[in-house]
Amino acid sequence: MGLGNAGLPLAAVIADHGIQVVGVDIDRRRCDLINSGKNPIPQEVGLDELISRYGGKGLVATTEYRDAVSCNVFIVIVPLFIDKNHNPDFRTLESAFRSLGSVLKRGDLVVLETTVPPGTTEGLALRWIEESSELKLGQFYLAHSPERIMTGCSISRLREFPKVIGGVDERSGIVAYDVYRRFIPNLRLVSSARVAEMIKVMEGCYRDVNIALANELFKISNELGIDFHEAREHANHEYCHIHMPSTGVGGHCIPVYPWFLINEMVRRERAEDAVMLRTARELNDGMIRYWMDRIMDGCMRIDKPLVDIRICIHGITYRPGVRELHHSRNLALAKLLKSRGLKVGAYDETLSKEEVLKTGLEWMDPEDADVVFNSFELSLTIRHPRDAPA
Ligand SMILES: NC(=O)c1ccc[n+]([C@@H]2O[C@H](COP(=O)([O-])OP(=O)(O)OC[C@H]3O[C@@H](n4cnc5c(N)ncnc54)[C@H](O)[C@@H]3O)[C@@H](O)[C@H]2O)c1
Ligand SMILES: CC(=O)N[C@@H]1[C@@H](OP(=O)(O)OP(=O)(O)OC[C@H]2O[C@@H](n3ccc(=O)[nH]c3=O)[C@H](O)[C@@H]2O)O[C@H](CO)[C@@H](O)[C@@H]1O
Image (cartoon, rainbow, N blue to C red; front, side, top):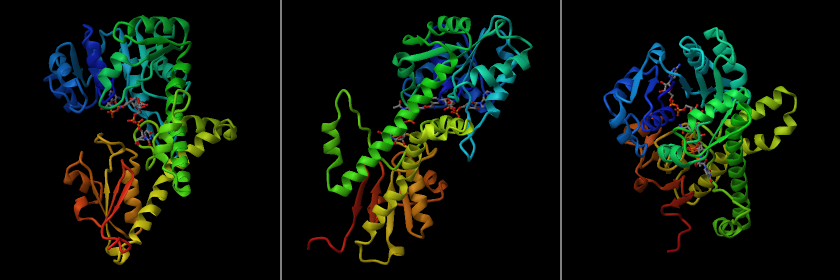
């Protein structure tokens, strides 16, 4: 259920293990493409080959849940959106679970792969299935196995990276483990669905907090006149891994997952027990103000009125090489500068001029700019500064 960036590679890998797959997705165009052997995610290495081999054959895509009625295993990987207060909007998940409940039979297994707040599978998912299927847990099995892919290398991740699975009860865990073992080579059974959910959320929190630490150490190093990268290189060893500084943390995943825990602790009136997670979130999101100040400092070195200086943000996707703008802090930085009345444009190797214009920013060739901020290298180029040596 869900043939998106995460669901389609998984479906293709399962088909590649000789298992017949029915993929349900509400997007008819996507289903048609897949059934004609065309890969809707060409940037996913190795997927072209699998879709051309199995699309419409070992992997049949459909918009109708009833076409999956003969299946015994149902894997749900539809998105979980977050509202402006960082609370999950469960409507898509609920709709998918209620639809699959209507085709579920005794003995079937359901596995949720979407990253969710710990407790969701045994709570909401179980309730939605029981209400829509009229079956009770025990007559079907339910587990959680978080998707741990990384856009661009999902196929190799599914084949190599450790994957975890946990049931809402012991039997569900064992049944799910036995099924997943057939197509996931590096699989570990954990004690519950709740633990499996926490593993994925924890991973996101770890990265967010560590990136915040790197960002803070970077700012302090700059203030002290120390080369951060040289210090980092020698600080890192088996027990120390300082991450890379940035304009902040973007994408669908890492900026979202800490909020699952922060908000839960607020609900429990224990906000003080999630203070590091909140600080990391705020620090990372606040990095665009730090970079705005650095860019403004650069502008001050040019002999032109501030409003006439052409500033180019080189790299606006959320991470290098990925054509995705979701929660991109690089894009947010460009928009922040623009909101201050500055002449800001953007350039990105992975985006066409039209795609840049769609973001609401001017397209600007870095060669035509007075100030270029490379947001992936964190380098600032100032053309013709007044303090340049003659
Ligand atoms: N993409 C990643 O890198 C990644 C990595 C790890 C985890 N995940 C998890 O996977 C989830 C899904 O992410 P994605 O990147 O695949 O999203 P996506 O937007 O690429 O794809 C979601 C798909 O679900 C379909 N869909 C929506 N509602 C549906 C319904 N009721 N029934 C059937 N299909 C439906 C959409 O049409 C779409 O094709 C995320 O919320 C996240 O928890 C994603
Ligand atoms: C490494 C990995 O397996 N990650 C995955 C991640 O994928 P992702 O696409 O979100 O990419 P990341 O590389 O994690 O980057 C996120 C943001 O952090 C910035 N960043 C990164 C490293 C650093 O040292 N300093 C930084 O500042 C970077 O620029 C970008 O904006 O989420 C998926 C969904 O859950 C997971 O499968 C999985 O954890």
